[in-house]
Length: 136
Picture 1 (cartoon, rainbow, N blue to C red):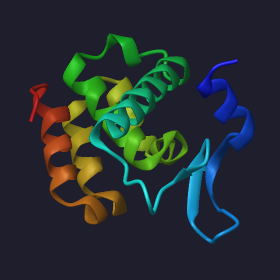
Picture 2 (spheres, rainbow, N blue to C red):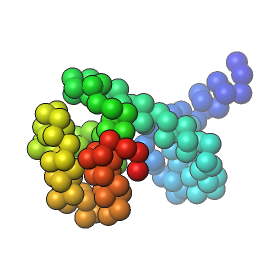
Picture 3 (tube, rainbow, N blue to C red):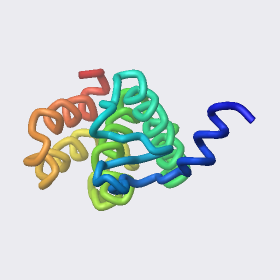
Picture 4 (cartoon, helix red, strand yellow):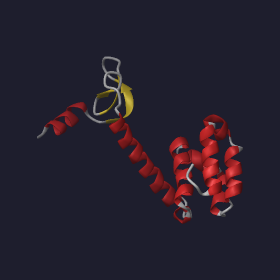
């Protein structure tokens, strides 16, 4: 037994935030989110893991994903991170345009979406990146 094993056993793991017995929001292995703020290192680990998960799902769900350039792949990863994979899949015309290699049309459709009004400048940048194949 070591301290990590002991605390893991005693706290148990909860993937979703819950209120502990004292009414504090807690997650994981008893991480009191109110008393112990999330630091940048933990946030980066979470970001890295979610980007890897989004990328793997996009590779699995869209056979053409790997044929895209890195900047265009990044647009889809960014959108999947923001919207969730299922949310991204609602962009049916955009995804078809990308699959067909019509990046100008895909870019236009991205900007005409409700998502674009919600995320503002992010949508403008990602749309430009899709259209130009350059990091923005």
